[in-house]
Image: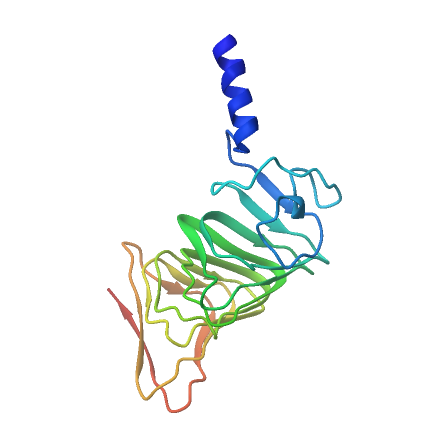
Amino acid sequence: QSSLCALAIILLLSGQQAFSAALTSAGSFADFTGVSHWSTGSCTSAISPLAISSGDTFTICGGHTLTLGLATSNIAGITVNAGGTFTLGAAAVPLILSSSGILTNKGGAISTDIGAHVLSNIVHTAGSTTLTAANMTSISGYVTYTAGILSLPPLLTTINGLFSAVASFIDNTLAGSTSTLTVGDNNVSSVYGGVLRNTGTGATLNIAKT
């Protein structure tokens, strides 16, 4: 028991969390990583965590606006609720999700400046996700689209996982004379009742299955 108490004290003093936490935004801030900017409670509470851990998941509540501000790594997941706003950073401030991390938009607004973000998986159910300024060539996991606006990066050439649209369309503003979006998985990549649309000037969009 004494060793457990000692461990708890060490964790407390070092500002580290023993387990990952599900955090919700406590307001609108320009610094995504500030401890006081997040809550371990619901969207209506403000119970700050002891520290921000790489294994935490983050939910931006409706009415709140957060900007990445600082480079992050190994983020387990970010969800933007309806009415919430999340702005990713510039080239020197990339968002790096873990290999299983998911960027989810449930009706909010997600946008980015130029940045070499690492987005493992994207789930867009509603709202607006505009990633056209991102300096990204691939997405390591899957992309799922339901409704709203999803604009993928012009430099994107590869989605390694399942690429699916339940309804409406995926809008890919690919630039150049010829662009190929390669979708690879052990499963069949599908578009259910949707239309793939390319608005890049003079570009062609070829969907290839690896």
